[in-house]
Amino acid sequence: MLESIPTDIALEITRHLGLRDAVSMTMTCTPLRSLTCQRNFWILILSAARILAPLDCPPLSDLATFTLAELKSLALSKLKLEANWSTEQPQLSLTRPLKTGDLLESSRILCGVQGTDILLLYGMFSDILYCWDKREACFFAEVGPISLGGEIKSIVVPNYSDGVSCDSFIFITRDREGPRTHSQSIITIRHKDGKALMLEHKSTEISDDGFIGDPTGLFPVSNATTCCIFEDAFDTEASWLSVAEREGNPSSSSIRYRQVAQLYDVDGSAGEPHARSFSYHGHGFILLLCGVMSLEILHLPRTTLKRGKHKWLRYYKLDDFQIPITVPSTSCWCLPSSPRYGISGVYIRGTKAAVSVLFVPCLPVQDDTAEDSLAPPLDFSSTHLTHIAIPVDTSVDNELPGPFCVDHSGRNVLGVIQQDNSHKLMLARYHPPEKPDSPGSVTVHWPQSPEKLDLQGVHSCYVDDASGTVHLIDRIEVFHTLSYV
Image (tube, rainbow, N blue to C red):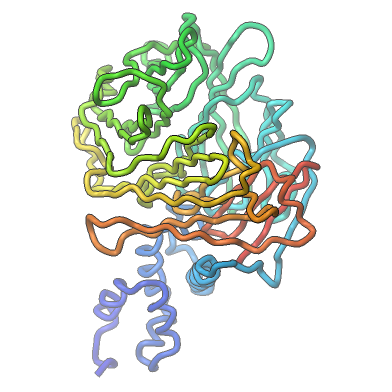
């Protein structure tokens, strides 16, 4: 009977399978197994799978250009990694568990280019950007370093990506010497087949009227308009949404940010917010923690931003969760490459006794490309904040116990923590809810690390859930790549 079903109908039915079911079909009867020998079958399966989570390829690469073997490899690699990540102690790959390389100076990992071997490293004393090949554990020989001319204070990751061969990042830097001068830089990485080809740099000085403190958030609205959250230079407990517009003279060598609104909670009280911002489909979003640590999400519609109006028209107050205030404590926001996978941000807070990890889910809605759209492309009204607290040794005082990072999707948080008098890799994983309007869940895992690796000396980390790799920089400036697939 199966033989009588036309191939196009069979493919339409099987496109709704998950990766695990699709791979299982390779071990069934001949009619079903024959479908898995067709490229169209895997193109349909993987196209659906990468809507939910990143694959080990650029996010918008044309799967129709992949060979059958490459498509199967993508599917199998994703399944093997998921099976390993899901265990309590994910194990290192037996074939290539560790790769190391020496750096030129004290550096930290800024970001990676999704689906490639490219990492962007920042020299913390020279203010130089380096392009690093994570697979070969060395610098890209043909891609020279770039001097930013100042210390990085804010970054958009990424500002622009065509999803295939080009990714751009915006940085705001501040001079280390002389007057308090800020600059805005655009770094563009061009790549092919997972390798960097060129690193481009364009810098513009920010004209300062004296009110600008350090930036805490940055997001682009268009090629000519950028929004940024700056601390007030005279009141460090105040933060302002500021806008720079360059329509009058796009080629100008400087830009000027103007204050348009002071950040405050929805009750109208200004305070010391923990704010981070991002854009999605031209709309601005601000994640705001203040007061008793309840979360507010402000939405700035694309059309109002382009018209020069910068008052938020909609906000969400997610008060079904509060982070207990414990002093001393420190905190940080980590943002994914894109909220398209269902996480808009992760808030990490450390105290003497525990590390709290708070996932802020969102629901991407149908893209609305109308220029006059006021509707947000992300919905927070039916999502539930998801939180977990991880005990740490009480010797940790007033600081996060180690470096932390999120992967491209925002669903995986990697950190180095001290527990039971030893330092460990910790992986907190967010799992979306199975039913609408219900909370997700978080599981904690302890990835294996080589015995010779001194985790206590690690000061920078990065996790790539698509490729199944963890990247660490230690105190003697050795770069380590750990593979789990």
